[in-house]
Length: 134
Image 1 (tube, rainbow, N blue to C red):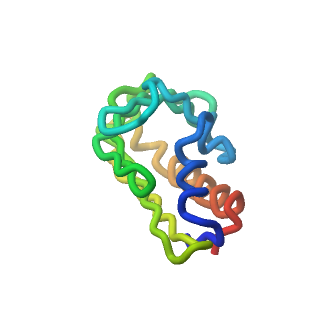
Image 2: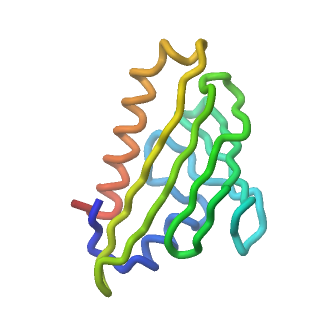
Image 3: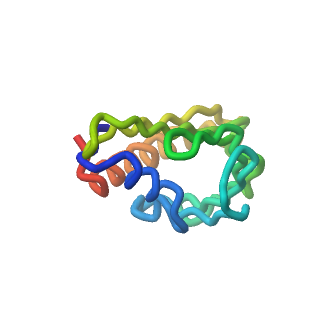
């Protein structure tokens, strides 16, 4: 999504305490590592009020990119799951934010895949609205 805000401002919101709290499906990030963040950083996220996932970042390019995989979850809905956040400067007052998710449902979670797709779509829509993105 293209955002009419400087890349450092967008990055700052993505690493803030409670980040992604603007997404109705998420409870906001709880960072479980001390700052400064980097590869190995951990956080916990509550999804849809019931799912709690613990994440570990394997890539951290401060101000630009961060990627994590799920270490554990309280509900066995995924065989694996991860996300990548990329913020690219497009000029002094604009950037492109690319949010990629990848995973595979477990046998237990497979019947809920349509619900998960709806949650993901709502998270993207909420983020577009929050950043007033195109």
